[in-house]
Image (tube, rainbow, N blue to C red; front, top):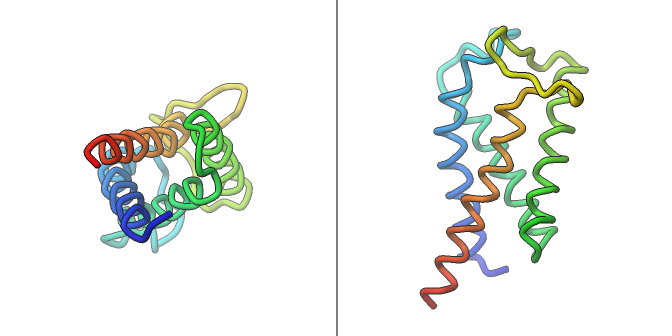
Length: 127
């Protein structure tokens, strides 16, 4: 993967996640004073962008595989965070019943992978 492609993946993922985080931030219950500081959504978006970049580094081909990896990773992150009390869902967070995970964060990583993949495909058609 070229440096340019890596930058495109990371910056696209970061931009998508900044927007997503700002919209679904209110679906969580604040647990820690640090969660109240300005910029906490940017930090979360930065971490999510790193996860998305990792998916594209480890799964070089196969969009469905990347999407499934994003689903599994989101589920693991949510389960870990709930288990260790990193965050809790507010009453407005839609929950996926069988998985006992928030719908918004589950869709977030998958949607980000989709957007990044579409941008990379558009870029490859230009070249």
